[in-house]
Image (cartoon, rainbow, N blue to C red; front, top):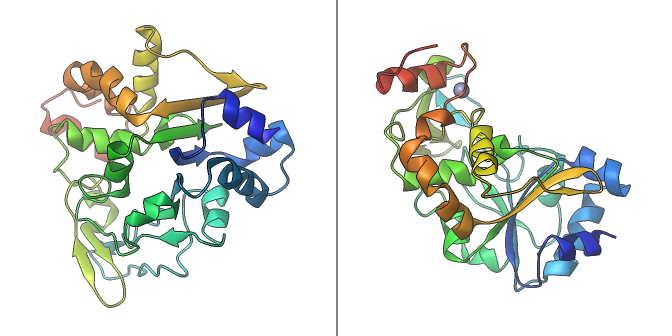
Length: 264
Ligand SMILES: [Zn+2]
């Protein structure tokens, strides 16, 4: 059943794919009992010449008051969902070394070193860049664009005016990743993603994508190269819409100030 889904949404053997998915929703549609069942089916379908990449972000930033927990590659629990956590336990999966934005990797994408820890965690030299260069695909299942990390990559790619503004200052953190024995100074630290669904609306309104459902479950299967082309106009002319409308979001409010936009 899962194989049929993978085939019908355009995945093929040897594809390089990043997954953003809600296991709860996958379970409710397919009655898949464990994340492992879903992931094994995907691994079998894609094969080791392809790739599976899942964010395993832990946000281990240095705290101003020194109270930060350290990133520990073996033990730090991924904050990006149960599917990610379980993927990390599967045989043959490795984890990159970014203290804030590590990735679990399986298959051909392991040519990215497990020591990958770029100063721009989701920009140049990150696993997302590898995926774009290798004509990768993002699969979103039961999640929306707020979890689509590649949009952060595009913020940097299109050099949006705020990419070098660290916007988590108010949260007692610094743009530095921390492990017990070393620190990594960071640039282009990703900000808030709550406004990312405005890209979905832009694409739908301009009929560049359609709403895609499978057995009642929302999904998007997106070739990154194609997504970059489709959203170029948005990133050049409408990028302010990436900032969210939550008045308590200090990150987006500080970015508005930087742009001299009206603070909401
Ligand atoms: Zn925000």
